[in-house]
Amino acid sequence: MKALKFFAALSMGFAVLACTPKAGEPAQEGEQAQDGQVAQAPAKEEAPAEFDIKSLAPTSAEKDTVAYLLGVYFGQIVKFNNFGEDISFCRIRKGFNDVLKAEGNPQDPEYGAQFKINPAEIDRIFNAYLSKQRDVKAHENGEAGKKYIAKMEKQGAQKTESGLCYIIEEPGTEVVATDADTVYVHYKLTDVKGKVIEEIAADAEPAKMVLRYNIAGFREGLKLIGEGGKIKLIIPADLAYGPQGNRGIEPNSTLVFEVGLDKIGKTVAQ
Image (cartoon, rainbow, N blue to C red):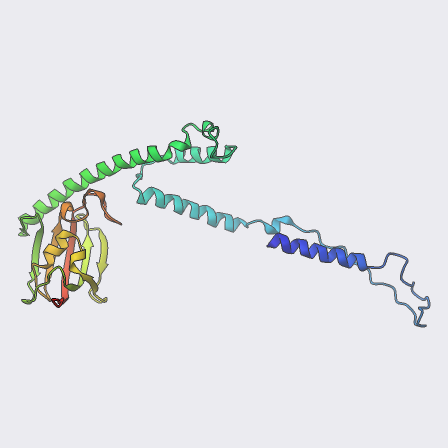
């Protein structure tokens, strides 16, 4: 749009110049005009300002902003896909520079020959790498979960046949939820290291959910207390999100819930 506006401005300027009388055409100062009036000398025209193309270019501040956000974007890819914090930034820079120097169409077979490793191999190599990263993290989390559950049992936690570990803090009333019921809860979810993953604070509106749509360990745990009760649940990975993990939850993670069951919305049998 700016280029079009600039072109239009130039066109208007040329039109004005085309309508300006040539030198010598106007009556000179002191000469008699046709209507008997003395003609005035024409005002001296100012030369048009030269256009500075730099005014169209991004400013240094805008370039810095974009550069920073490119770093944020790349950092999110590295972090949330579990590429690892020890990845080499020197090699990242090398690959970045190679892309900038590369010529031709990335769709052409010859394009990949300009790189140390053909970019066409990205999907295969990345998937193999991330699979190994996931396996390592899953093993580490599995071992950490076993140790944590063993520690909690020594501190008096109970364990069900399924492997769910729990501590009832307040039993609540005799009204107990079923899978079909809607529950209103406040909770804090952490990993075994105490890192908070998600929380519905006590002074916030409770979360409302149909019990059947939750992970197995959460469903089982909430049936161990009644309305108004409170419970701590230590849910092993096989009763949670397993080796795949979930948003913000690493593979094979043992989850720790502190739950207050505020209300149960009983489902009317049809």
